[in-house]
Length: 297
Image (cartoon, rainbow, N blue to C red; front, top):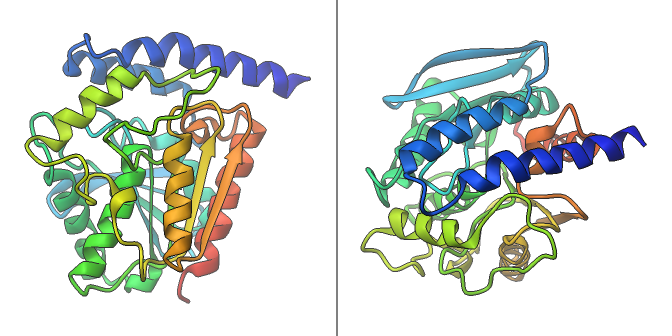
């Protein structure tokens, strides 16, 4: 009963605070401020430590809980490539650090419209290379991300593979945005967070002059052969459900070890409520299990 009340309250919170802010008429600069305030409802574990610094010249927040016994998770935050930050995602990265025993590293990749494609992808790759320079082997690094950051994580793995670079141990994506053409958006009865007009605008701002079908912008159109094990989590109450399902199908058909988890009656990146909502906590723990299972010793 209590969890039902918490779920209802959190759904109302994102509907009243997040969804109105994600309106195409609101300037991006204002959206960034509003979302940074809304994400205060996402609370990290009490014993989580945060270290600010730089990685590949990018401002970065590293999250850890207890003694770090495993490798690192390169975490790419969501926000339609135009909003969001490592700070807004401290709750999620903190809980992921607790679930994995890893250092979770979240860089502040450049955002559109000031820096359209391929700036975010270039920054993600630079952060990956910098972690290797620090002494992590590729097998000791997992990559993860939510929403646009989930699509960016897939695009990063594709670019590394295409450039004959070592690949991460695994990929984990929450509510990934993988088709910026918007041609196959899902139509749930209830969508507490996203507005299709906003994601359409964000897609244009990010892609710039590049076609939206570019696989490094919309990974669902890409080649998945040779990519590492992939975990996809998505809620049933979001317009990106089809993005997740099509991603799972394409990856699986290419021989990638793929796991898709659909959480009924939950919304876009519900994992930010880990520690409050039991199903969100369980989802992050499942992500931690996936990451740990594939990390090199």
